[in-house]
Length: 149
Ligand code: DQA
Image 1 (tube, rainbow, N blue to C red):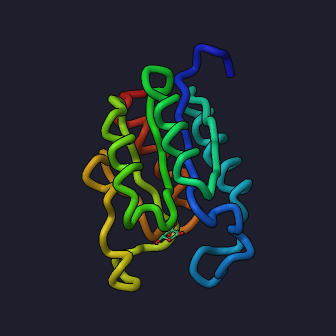
Image 2 (cartoon, rainbow, N blue to C red; image 1 turned 60 degrees about the horizontal axis):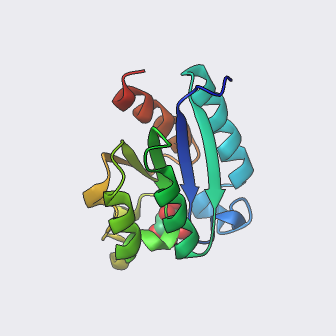
Image 3 (cartoon, rainbow, N blue to C red; image 1 turned 120 degrees about the horizontal axis):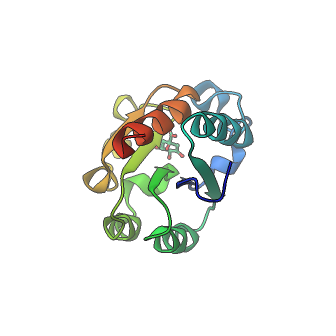
């Protein structure tokens, strides 16, 4: 991959560092590293470069979004539980000009009531949810389509 490949920022929010171990009946047995590897491979097939950050701290995710402005071509974000209440992440994403794909392993719409609200959805180009680990590849495909690559 050359340095001129467009960069897609993949952001993983709270508790996603525990994937593989955390509630595998809901989130599967693959680790976050597995998902990043799958995303990276799919991205490479489109000439895109994945840059990944996981953090349990809202501020780190916000800083990464700021850093992506005019540097990254697109953002894929699974905010974890921040999805449901972080207006600060909403506002940071609103400042990003490129495509934004909201991603969830599970389908929050079929789960507890409090998960039915996403404050990220209004500023996302679209949402991929409920397809487990395959969602990471689908999200990269969605980004490639939105970028016209
Ligand atoms: C999640 C869904 C959220 O409701 C939850 O808080 C997560 C993971 C998902 O990928 O399914 O941490 O974003």
